[in-house]
Image (cartoon, rainbow, N blue to C red; front, side):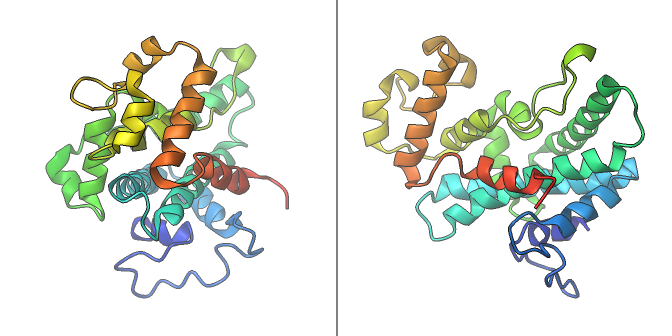
Length: 253
């Protein structure tokens, strides 16, 4: 199913001859994509198959983010962000449903979900730029990996679960998702660099995430500034990824 991850998230992809998404992927037509979530859950009943599908989904997310960074005001820019959010949701819901009956212990349950997502991310990120280049949208996947640094993993798979007393499935880090896209923009508009100059180095490059945190230790303020930069950049709500994710992971409706 790996070649069809874009279709499963509602966007026709290339090389999908013989695959008809029809109405089954989103049977209630409310962008929750229950049919697609069932596919992700079914594939994740086998750990190896689930890893391959999740890896393909992460690659598609990074390609969408890279395309957005390259052309944030393009006609498909909003759809790119929605695709990222839906795939975040399909990954989380699919793994969660696949293993939810296998573990009575919450901590073990949360850890195995995280471990599976981490394995898929690691498999992708260690392919090397030459291998990634051969993937659909590979040049944009490489753009995101090369520009994002250490913040990429948390953005894509979330933080590791806490101890047994607070074990839970942690969602992706949407604030860092926004940052990673900003970081990948080839040339940030002067308007943004002038207004948020404290976050840029002397060459006009957006600082690394760790440097951003040192510059603005107030997490709420930092998140608000990133969101404002994002909205100025493309005229798009920075919460677009989060909203698409939330719709998919709803368990009712």
